[in-house]
Amino acid sequence: MFASPVVEVAGLVAALATVAPLDPAGDDGRSRRADLTDAELVDLIRALEETKAAAAAAQARATARLAASQRAAQRAAGVRRDRIGAGIAAQVALARRTSHHRGTRDLGLAEVLVHEMPHTLRALGAGVLTEWRATLLARETACLSLEDRQVVDAHMAGDTATLEALGDRELVAAARRIAYELDPHSVVDRNRRAAQERAVTLRPAPATMAYLTALLPVADAVAAYAALGRAADSHRGSTAAGRAETERRSRGQVMADTLLERLTGRSHAEPVPVEVSLVMTDRTLLADDDEPATLLGYGTVPADYARYLTAAAADADHAWYRRLYTAPTTGRLLASDSRATHFTAGLARHLRARDHAVCRTPWCDSPVRHSDHVSALVDGGPTTTDNGQGLCEACNYAKQALDWRARCAAGPRHTVELTTPTGHTYHSTAPPPPGAGRHATFVT
Image 1 (cartoon, rainbow, N blue to C red):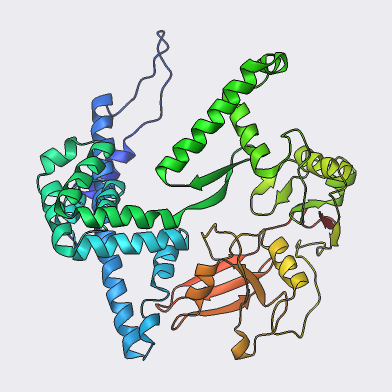
Image 2: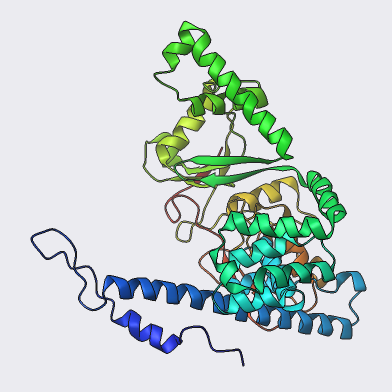
């Protein structure tokens, strides 16, 4: 059994039961609490934080044990050496209700803490470190040999009093300094290899906005940011038009517009070309209905914004329409079967529309990269929309690991039942399209 958490869970539950809602009584307008004083509430918050850290340490031990057991089972089953370990991160992700990417990170952190950084694991279990701060220490020592990593581990996490007083930046700076002193060549090599991981990513933001993020070497990133800043300052101050725009656009807005213009070659005021990515009902498109639309890869957008996108694209001759019909009661997208062994472009497009371009594995928010047969083709699974689903690359490969099973199951819409090697079962149901159960939908 695992060690007892820092604070007895039963005592915490009892304490939580005594937390009364805010009582706005009193002529001075200040709130009163019936059972716990403010000092006791602060103590309770700290106790809960330490208990979360202790749970994270126990979770790391459980994860490392699962990984060892699963690898042993795969070796005993004769799995190829280069496939040993496949699917374990996906099981961790499903158990923690998170994405495959996060599951991979959580698995790696658990094995590092259990097998290589015992002092950090002990500090986490004692509630001195949070899981995030333990991740920072593991990250900053990843380039070192096991012996050097354990030196940093003992130095940084061996003295919990000093460790607890450090902020995140101080923690990273101290670990980085010791790592460099122990093995400067490894640190330099890691920095050089990091440039190979440069990339551009897109993720949704609130209110029909999105984050376009570039991971660049620091010198290049600083230079790009400075160039946008100079361009914005020059535009706002050099012309009468620029000074007039100062009243309408902030410096940050001008920088964002400049970035867009330099990347796309068009002004920020020009309409956005709309491709096969926006799903809405015919009533939203043609009758000013307020049913929201779905922007594939982003999520729900207001009806007015969807109409704005289609109108702007139509004015610029960029819009075209594809009619898809849904079942009247369930909202299930209808399509015909195919005898092909690979999903055609049309079938793949249909799967993306049905699955909203997001991986169908539960809790995975990654964009669809593969059109997957739910029941494998080698097992006689047909190439149809009913036997198809959109998956990210990592989840598709994990599904092919030893003892993973998937099948179509009954549900209100397209539903997949996924069973892991440990016998745990998860269900994934396609999201409802806009206006599900009412009328036809359009994809523009």
